Length: 404
Ligand SMILES: C[S@@+](CC[C@H](N)C(=O)[O-])C[C@H]1O[C@@H](n2cnc3c(N)ncnc32)[C@H](O)[C@@H]1O
Image 1: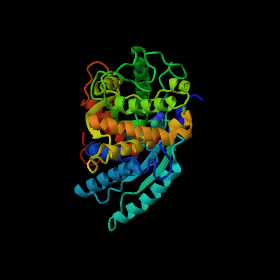
Image 2: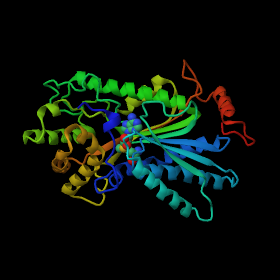
Image 3: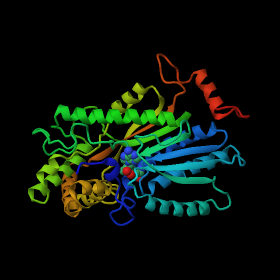
């Protein structure tokens, strides 16, 4: 059966040992790193907002606790701001939309939301937290999700490396001799296949930017954090080559043992692409729709527990658990559930061997940007008087001085 992302892609469901809920520490650690960027964007949006009703969306929220850390951070930033500037009667109202594909485990997420609401009320004893309304929003972020100009802040953590399809032209077709055994780009991948992965990335991101541009209010912010790569040269061996290369080798070993059909592996590609900073900047600039406030790359260990664990065998198990929580449903839908335990045991072993040689880290790109008033044409200046004026009109003229 051919892969269908909307049907087959979701993180491991529930809250059991192998669930995403219990195995999303890599993402949580990355979120910790981007907090100052989120705080700045939240303040920027909130201070320019009248009435004080803020619409916020987390795209690709999944079913684990990280999306609630995001909500908590936004609420905390606004509560702190109101206290600092002495606006006890500011009465912010916050609406959060938690978006993911329809196959996401929204039931588990809603249980976490219920617990979160109770905790938030308790944490703010004495001072009421800003009223906050949280809703689920199933649908692909490669489609329109919101009415025109209705969202103030978009956030997405560890999602945009996922493509809407496996590269066009590769889906369901046999691999060439050169690309045999690959499920993602490796050092030896043919230029034709590399181009297909890159074109899919460019199409997806250009569409994503266009859709979010339509949905954001002018001056609205968007913060995107995804798995990327350090070097511009896509064929240079990097973290994700190894991470997915070891998964490909584990699948191959199941073929060798007769547990998996060779033809199945020959028609499988991961629907992912890890861009470089240069590729991200090029696509945003080409769109002309956003001003980039901040872009940076940071690294985080493959094993999120590595500060506590120093032996490669335990790290292999930890990494395999994290990757399984992300990949399991997709792999199960394509190859069947029966191989999962064997596959990830093999994978843990191979990761451990790799980590003995090299302590590889994920490269993570974070990009914070703001919607332009006009699409860029010629020598447009982002700080122009026109933009400030438009922003004032769109947000509503306030009695206090506008933070232009
Ligand atoms: C690794 S998880 C990250 C989840 C969460 N943001 C976190 O940091 O814990 C990636 C999520 O992106 C979602 N995703 C991938 N493609 C998507 C799409 N086209 N539309 C909506 N969600 C998508 C997946 O279903 C998955 O839940």
